[in-house]
Length: 299
Image (cartoon, rainbow, N blue to C red):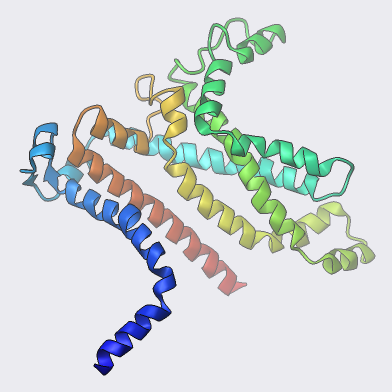
């Protein structure tokens, strides 16, 4: 009886987190475990419904990892992630520094920039698709009028520019998020340090190099880690603008997993690729955190 009373007492103490546990179990833990199970089976539309899926071990993983298209998609994903992180962090930092200075109208201007972040991605992707259209897009029209090009560029239908086009769209989507995170970090920096630096004769550039940037490293670490997790798994921008084409030139790992599962109906291979993608994201994030922690210990 004492054991039962103890269990009931503990359950009552932690009952407030029960809804969160149920939610995570239904919408996170169960789907992940189910996907892992799918990745070890030969699944088609027929046996997916009937339930007689054959267990084939690591065959799906071997097939995916030895497919040349996977190497192409992985390379594009890494380029897509790296370019987005570098450009969005750079422009986000510039905007954060700009809006960290008080001037008339800075609050409403900052709010306007957040519209890009709040706009549904399907709308943003469609707008960029129209803007980059080879025949009617405003980008080609502006470049032609400025004399920078002699004929329309087929941004989304050319293998040399399709990946660049989706990177531009994703950078535009990511800049407001980077700005908000970095602006919060800048506003938390102690003012007394800058006052002491000004008294010592340090100009704005030296203040940024020796004070702002070193003190912003923890914020930058969080931003980069979140950026890797978010950007590597981007699917919707690719789906709307190029669908991985032309000739797989903008194919990325998440879209390839979707293609395998819902276009080619190779559900086991799609599940295996999804798990590989999850492991890649986790590995990159853990490696980055390890390097940052090691650097902080050395400092």
